[in-house]
Every structure is written in structure tokens, then in C-alpha cells.
Image (tube, rainbow, N blue to C red; front, side, top):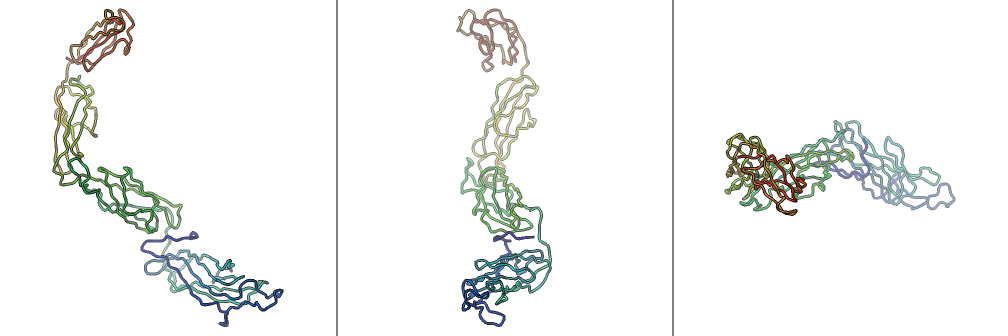
Length: 420
């Protein structure tokens, strides 16, 4: 496994070890300073180009280590050689090929495949003449470290996320307004390797972290606080990326439920209205439930004592029973205090009659209203006696006031269905 060049973010609770060897100056195998033969003629095959003295040399590496200071089998480290003040040099890591030292630096990688104690990275820094011949060398080494047995985690990046409290209680006044700010929860995202949080999406747009989670240092477990002010259920999605392989990304989701204050002493109030007073058996009854004085934690609806599904506040359609009766709604606060509201209705017997409606005596622009002796359900034009009768233009129904109207000289017979 290769570490991407420029790897800077590593496991939380783990740390990045920088192995440095400080040198006051490069020395040759005999212990003398590594001098450039500047006294030789410029045309000499043993002459140098550049500075005359190597002023410093070091070997440093970036290696993932655990709190005990040990790396893991399979880890790949990136090492960098620095040789300031020198020109035309190579560095040969132990067991690897020589690399050029360009502009005073060179880098290479090594993967550690076996467990071992007191491992040390080292190599030979060589000064070359213009003919490419080695004229002086020095060995530079890192500090020692251990390689522990184990495997490097690869494959799909898993994640789990949970909130410290799945249900929060939001302090509110009797109108459902926050009293002292939204509740705060602690979120923890975990995986089997170091990762970073790319972004967080809250479906209700109410997620307010105290610290930007995308700025947290990478780790296999990341925790932070966030405020959840919205009453109800908040799904929260975390987008994360693998540190060793940023293209390996995943999502994990949690939900937090925010309820009203547990010691709320004022219950929400409700009103229940109905689209009309009288219905035929099995007809659609449109009931509208309104809630004030604070949010409702739960609600229920009874029609003639029987439970009826009524999932939302607002207009809802239920079917009329076979006998007259009432509908009753109950709303309850989070603390269990309830209020009830209701409405009465009538189940009538559908009756049909033939009703003549004539606007010819009222002129072209006059209207004639023909009353229906009950709650109007429907009307159909059966026969035209004069004029042009077009529904919506020269004739129509008014189910609220229970009549048929005609205009524009329309005269016709209508079959009307109504409830007595």
C-alpha cells in the first residue's frame, strides 16, 4: 500500500512521527569534512560544480504510529533526504536504488512487511565529481522505531454515527417558542480507520454544530456538539472520506427527535371543522383540524366513537358513517396534558327530483335561482326547453346555499339529488 505524497492527516489518538537526524556537517568515511575539490582546475575530470562544502544532512520520515510509538506491518512510510549546501549528490537507502538529490532534497518510500524491533532507516549520501565518480560519502540514519504485527485496513470505508441522546427536550413557552435556546447533543462518528468528515446534511436545515466538523483532525472516531432546534425528527447524514484513500467515501445517518419541554403545563388547544353539515352514507367528509397554543406531540380522531386514521394536522378526508353523529379530536402535549375538540354532522337520505329552472323571463343577463329542498349533492341537465344551456356558463349549482341557477335565457329540466 502506498501513502499518497503530502500525507498530513492521520489517526486521532495516533500521531505523526517525524524522524530527524541533525548534523553539523557531512563527514566522509574517515571522519573529515566532506570538502569539494575547488582547488582543482575547472577542466579537471575531478572538478566540482557548485558549492564547496556540504553544510548539513538529515533524513526524516512520515510514518503512522500508535500511542505506544509503533508502526504497523504493511505501513508505507515516505522519507525525505536533505543535504543543504551540496551539489551533484545521490542518496542510496539501504536495500534500495540510488536517487538523485535535486535542489538539496530527495524522497523515497519504503513499505515495512515484517514485524521488528528497533528498526532504523538509513542510507549513504554520496558526493560526485563532474565525471559521476563518488569522491566522498556519509551514512545518515533516522531514530529507531518498532514494527508491530497486524494488517493494514483496506476496502470499503464503513461508518456508524450516534447521538448522545436520541430524544431531546426543547424548552418552550405555551406557544411553542424556544425559551433558552435549542437543545445541544453530542454526535460521534466512528470507522475502522482514520477518516475526515467532508460535510453534514440535516434534512430540516436546523443542524448547528459548535465546531465545524469538517475541520476536525482525522481519526477513527470523531465527536462534536451540535444544536438541534427543530421540533420533530431530524435525519442527519454524514459524508466521510478515507485518509489513506480519499476516493474511498461513504455516508452514515442518525436521527434525533426533539420534543417539547417535559414540564410544560399548558396543553395545545384545537378546533375541528367540517366541510358541510349533512352527508350521504359513505360520502367523503372533509374534516380540518387546527392546533394552537403550542405544538401537539400526538393526536387522535374518533368518529362516532370509532378510531379513524388522521395522520396530520390540517384538512383530511374520512368516510361518513351510516348514521348521524360527531367527530372528536384529541391533541396532547409532550407532558401528557390533552385537550379535545369536536363537530357534529348529519347523515341524510339521498332523494332525487325533477326540477325546472327558467331564466327566460329575466332577460339575457338575468339569473334565476331555483332552490333545492335539502342539502344539494348533484344536479344534471335532463332536457332543454329554450335558450342555450351550458354548465358553468348559463347554468350551475350552489351546494353551499342549495340551489340551481340559470341565466342567458336558459330553460331546462334538471335531475337533482339532495339529502333530506
